[in-house]
Image (tube, rainbow, N blue to C red; front, top):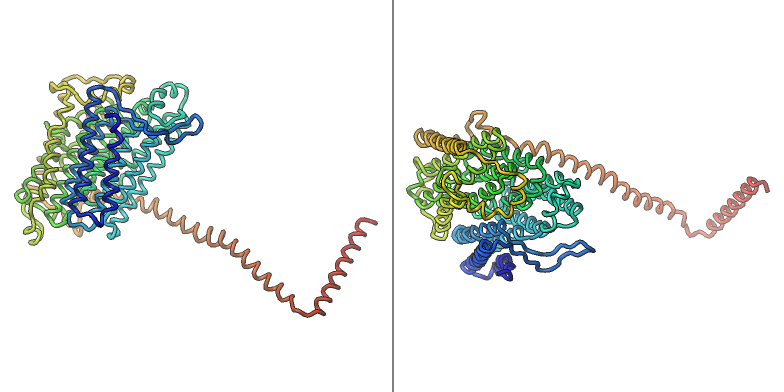
Length: 639
């Protein structure tokens, strides 16, 4: 199996090449089959690799070739598949295949069908490269590659200027974070003389004891994670990224790309464990992001925007887990979130498909009898994300909240309140979409129909996974065994030794679990009372809202703040440099030299008359001038 590891990323790359070159000649059926089946084969190889590592406990390390070699400094192009990356391979290829299959139906009538599948395959290739790299440089190639694919897919319908702007916004904001990541890699090379995980991680404790700038290194790496995983203050690109087709939202902005920052920190866990200051910063920013995004999601009326801010909030939970040292819990939530958020995005796409492209929940309602499979599967995803047992989100979220409680009561209180808000805005979305009377147009109502099988089958599979995935992490208090924790133990062993155990009493655990579930149920009931029993529908954009609701609806004007504080001053500075420094200064100086030379030559040209008498006269004047100069010089020297 070791010799076939390289095929896992190469298969999607082959799909990109074939579909990219044949996008105008191959039929849509062939393009969809190639794009999907190659990812499916990669999933099969990932499953085989997973069981190989599970049975042997030995990571697979494959050095393909020496890429950069300068003196004693070597960067191999090598892959490392261990317990952590093997699970990421299953998520990327497994969920990726389901989204490819879904896209065959969703994008069937789009003129850019072939190009879309080529981009999807390319994204999967770069994401696999990111998680399989055995050093930070190979990881960075994948890191930048998924950023490029994100730009291409978000702006896929580039003829719409707002969609193109959203793609540019995502690309630019990610570059800010990527600069921090790149500087962190440079500092790692300067400190450890290598970018290889196998060289850096074992030496980290000794290097820190010797005074290595570990806090600066980890903070720079975290800046990269903030950009890629949409945390405060670099989070505003993710909601705008909903401009892309719904399968893009599911694949990139729910299941894979946005979790790259969490994966990078989990991979580098020993470095962050040795930097408690950075860990505290991660926890605070993660918690603030989770709460802030949840407050915004409370009032959104676009079904995809609700899910977008939900993604930002759930990513904040994952960073909270990382910050308090619950590496397994954070990665557990990555896994469960991949299932239920991909399900919810694809379900939203099915709703939009049934509604002839409508995304405003105020114009929906009463759909549960019209699109039953979509309704049931989305309900499963909603229960899972709300943290209601026995669905998957309950177990992963409970593990993070328990670790937060052990670290800080304040962290737990904010976290559990945010969990209640999550339940409210998610059930609000469900009630506005599926309950009550239909509020759309006559044409939309008569167009309502369930999506085709290639769209509903992925929904059913993801719903099953969302329901049962939590079983791999059942806590001991519920009579279970944390299978995921045992599997990931070798990856986090060094960090867990340094952090120590923070065991909670059984009574405390019961109280914590009961509190989070009770808040989720109360929030669900409150949403039902408001949006079903009372039939409340959010006001239109032309009507006035209460002050706090208005702030939430307009995303607390963060985009407007960035526009005034950052974009406009930068525009003004660029205009100053263009008009004053470049045009008047640099261009003025260069053009002035040219003009002065031209004008001087014009004046001297007049002296060339062609009159021989004038030339003899000027020669005599020159001789006299030389004689006068010579006499003055002789007198000055006293000769």
